[in-house]
Image (tube, rainbow, N blue to C red; front, side, top):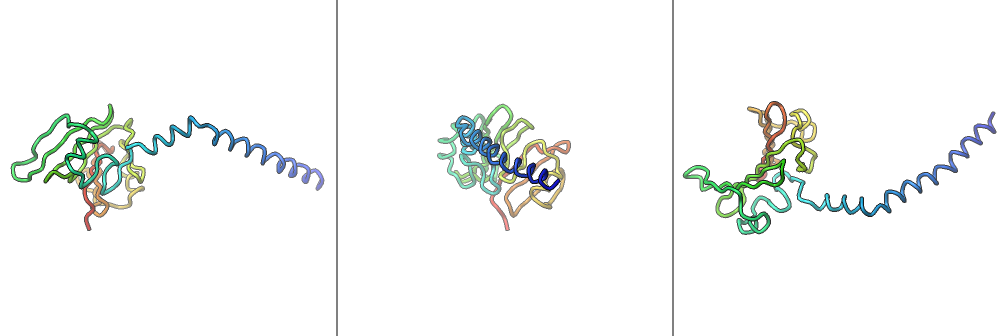
Length: 174
């Protein structure tokens, strides 16, 4: 009986390195997959709280914004006395972005999207998530009128029918 158990154990032990080696070679040597992953990670789909995106960020000049994204699809003044101008862009079929400009600098960014949007926050929040999932990623925030605010992190989530629809980025506040 002991010899049979030892035989089974040794057989399994001898097979493991071969199967593990085979699995590693398939994963590491698949250069096409590796290129796709690296391209995705280098893309501008990740939203950083209190900062923005790689190409559009808080404090960026209007000239830099236009150099990165081109002229906005729409440009409108927000209120008579605020001095805020809103630039509107369509990022893809599923995501739109508005950038708040004041004194020729980016002050705030708002992204609106659907479940198919590629954009996600660094912590993993995605469009169409319910409130409780956002709280799992970010902890308790201030929830009021379908808006979940994290002032110290510089991010707010707006919900419609219980699903995340808009992500707003602004400077972190203490």
